[in-house]
Image (cartoon, rainbow, N blue to C red; front, side, top):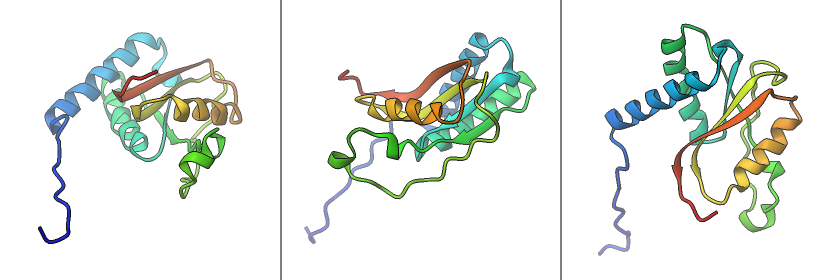
Length: 143
């Protein structure tokens, strides 16, 4: 070996499977939200932002309504910053008020729930949502 470690990639979902999963999530969201125009998707950096944008495309296709989509970085609301350290935060960008909206937090992985807890605390600073729902692609469990 030349000192470089070999990195093996593991594909969890193919592009086709990912698209099918996102479309299924969009369908499930529309079944639970009576008024699609009240939806505000909020991605948690980094990959949650990408997933929320993809989810917005499917929601718009299925509902015929424009779906507001934004980003919320909960870094400075974490209670474990000393342990995990800080990273360069991504600016929070919400396209509209949170008040009385059906907010859907989107993240790629949930493990301990600390990021989601911090995101809920950060979200409260932006207004009072009618309801907040969580969508994640991978649940690592252990809670």
